[in-house]
Image 1 (cartoon, rainbow, N blue to C red):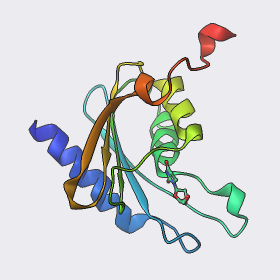
Image 2: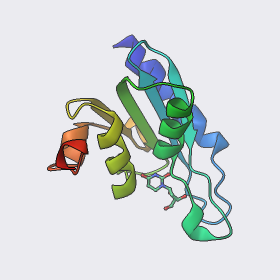
Image 3: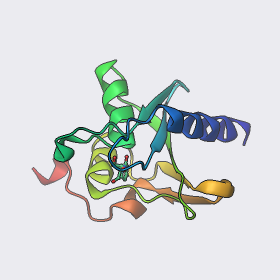
Length: 131
Ligand code: THU
């Protein structure tokens, strides 16, 4: 699919914008809205390490703060030999804003790719239905 190739390129390009002076571990994301708009995200670290924001959450918070609520795809890219694995906090944020069946493409170096869904990343998730 041509669109997906472009979304992967956007996530990989974002790696150059990551602010990672402490871990030197850049992560890039491309979040795609239902109508095809893309939001890039990068990890943004802080001297107070716990304040770090992951690339995935940066993309979600950028999009949601612009009024977006409907998403069709997320790509996450890392300079890792295997496809990068999103952290638990980011999986919970995906589960808040995305259908469980939404595809998530995980990308590593050398074009190594893993295709998953939001519910595969976070099964039996805590959602608004549990409140
Ligand atoms: N990181 C992300 O940006 N996304 C993930 O899903 C995994 C971890 C970042 C956070 C931190 O800046 C660096 O990777 C090392 O943990």
